[in-house]
Length: 552
Image (cartoon, rainbow, N blue to C red; front, side, top):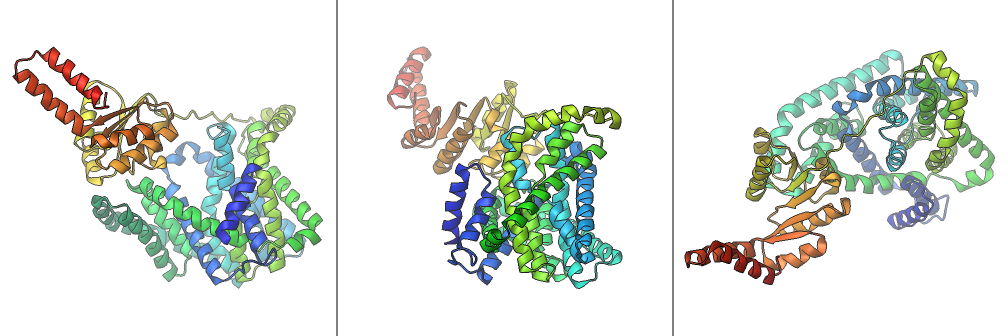
């Protein structure tokens, strides 16, 4: 029932171009105790939701790469640090004026400081603005927020217990740092040989089980020393992120993460109270409006303080003005440990959902913000604003992608290298990948049928794709995946049997070479030449036979 409601809600909101997360929340609200009462929020739902949080943080760790942050390090640590600090401080001050205790006021600051990475990054990507100056600043702020989630989750239980002194917080963060260093050191020596042995089997199921085992094992180990399962999952992702298995691990885990995080958001939606929305619609509406305007103003101020141009600061501030998915994680944790009441949680969740529903509309405000920036241009001169260079995405293009690096793939790579043609290779055999890398081949480890891994070899911008796999079904899936990503690219696929040719053509292959046919035709050519026929005549006869076989 949960899954059916989620599907219906997401489809309906998709027609309105609203985010899937909002659909999950609405689905939970409709079927939950405060809605139609079809599903109670019980231990089973909570347990599945916790798995969703663990997998969500695991994939955040997998996607985190220090190397990728170098060119936006200033935006991450200066821009992000200012935004989180200013927002937390402002909400803390307002909450104290409203009569909150220091612990609850700081907790409220944590909730409001975070924005929705999923919604914002998707919107920037759809508008092609990830590399724009305001896109870089927005991404930097979001990354810093994601990094803050872990220490925030450590501090919240201390706030509830009243033990959150500067010394205790420093001790908790220090303990987390020690565990992190120990985990990484252990992983350097233990995990690589284990993963290498698993990858050699070529079994996708065993590889997935191993990756999930690493995630669960490290999460469980960190819980034994008093840290959260989510922190352990984040560490597990970090351990695998920069390894040669990181991209394949992320591609395999994403479907599971999406399933369980969907259940998590549905379970949060069950906390939504339509009665609160009906009885306190003005309060909830004003709260949502105040949160968005306040976050917009503070994030814009953070951008200006780091001397970004007014236009960049305004657009980045508008981009992070909504409440984020990790705020829901913290809200649930705060409710569990007694930092907020059920009624307060319901008010916050209702207001937060409204901010997320409004988030996709921010793109339409860009012209208005541009005109406002033009009026405020003197601020740029006053602050001596430094322009943020627009980052040009350097996608590889015009190259040939080789999927599969067996004997055929190796011969093709040799021919391309001799012809001085650019190429990239993707293969699922870790032994072949390691051997090829030692020889300097441009090769990546991963499943050639998975679109996320095909992105690693820039299939969208390839001039040609050659598929040389021994598995007929995998070849068909690879052709379909490539064709869906690059509809116009020529695809040459190798088939083992003549009977496989129609399937590959139907899947989208431009040219199909059948080993069974080509091997027999080569033998025929040799026989004709040895029988005294001229080479030209033999080639003509073989070409006619090839067309007759349907492989011309």
